[in-house]
Length: 316
Ligand SMILES: [Zn+2]
Image (tube, rainbow, N blue to C red):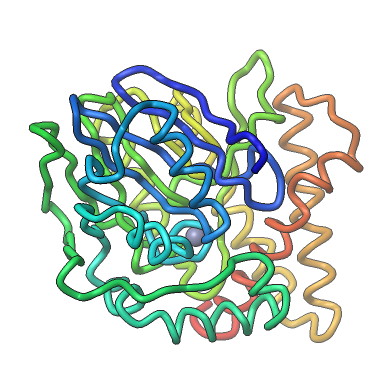
């Protein structure tokens, strides 16, 4: 097995590469509090050996993990839950109430992903989706909290990217595990100005008003960091908040502009979003060649556009 890439941050938090598609695309987090631990996000079934390896390297027994906490049930966050839970005998799954049934019976989730990615790619990308026994599942609604060995982890309902999305407030870690609600921020785009982040509008529950409100809710907690799934810890939250709002509005304006383009709509939206990101990246001081930027964000732009089109056709 290839070595797992991870980095210890402070406050007992470790960011672990879930090894989805490329290094630095998707993260899971390990939170350690004394002799107990929790995972935030599970990646896919293919991520699980790496997660277990990190436990082993840190001398944390599999029976010392109390919780597995995916921020929402999209498969790059929760696809590996069933396989991971099988290896962690004491762990309970903590999940948004709207996501719980999909973890107990993943068949609809599987069908949904197969419709987006195709049957064959779906198996290759995500591996098996195993069900989690209902008695191991905790549903966490807005305002609920759990204790990890005395460390409070509190839940905020944060729809906008997905209705089954919560974020996890960790005062001790001075931040919030924000899943996909605070956007995507690849470290390749870091400049002297700091992190660059852009919203994710993937199908099928993008809701711009809800996303605006959730972004504000996250930053209004007044903590120092967001721990993003894609990818890593970011600070400078007031600037990023402003930029999230601007880009959500820009994506929506782009979608509306091309709403009635017919069969050329998809291509126009992809190129429009790419142009918008290139322009903003340049303003951010990013000097990567356009071809490299396309490599890094191509899949996200495609999914974002699919999400905007679904929104246009159903709600916009
Ligand atoms: Zn997602």
